[in-house]
Length: 81
Image (tube, rainbow, N blue to C red; front, side, top):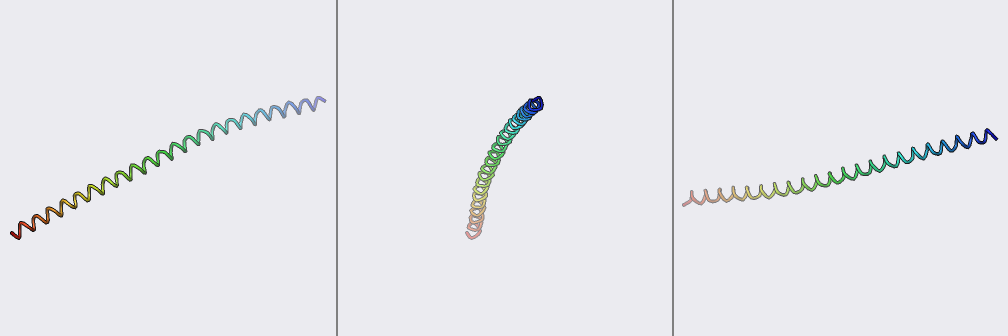
């Protein structure tokens, strides 16, 4: 009977230890999920920023190219006069 009581106590202690470890693992997983969500959000923000900057750069480049073409056209037109 004493051996059974000892076994029950040891089993209960082991169950408590395992439950504690499971709780700690769940908390760690939750923190990792939060960190992953933040990193994914940051990555999306950076990708959007990169797209906007590229679009702005292309627009500015096109404006500069148009301006240079206009200046070249005007220079040739003045030469022909």
